[in-house]
Length: 152
Image (cartoon, rainbow, N blue to C red):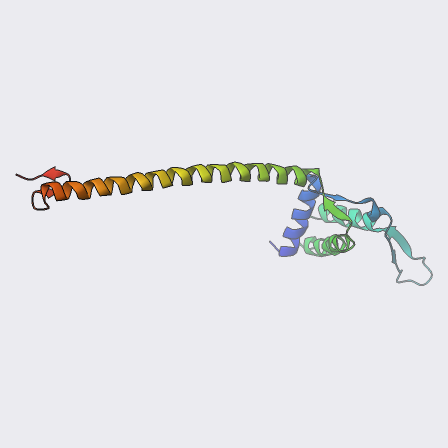
């Protein structure tokens, strides 16, 4: 799949999930599209209108293999303009996901800390056991004590 199509699909999904929302300013930014025919008047719409129309046109032609990329490119153009104008912001969906991730991250950090403390305890116990093992070797002599079995 084309990266343009992937970006458009991701943006649309994030809008649907309320991860992104449009600021009210998108309704106040006007674009004028000049007509190719001098006798026709120019078309004047807001950024939000152009973006909504581009998304709708893309979705209507999503299954049309010949035109899909063209509609995706047009849609991405308006998405980029909206981002450039700063009218797309994080929505409640993304904010709540970030809070959930932050909460999970804190739980993981606490778990890591507990595991590190337990590892430190195990390392300390291992050192103590190694010291005891050395004492036993000195006590019985290395020639009679091999591993954990006493030789006769």
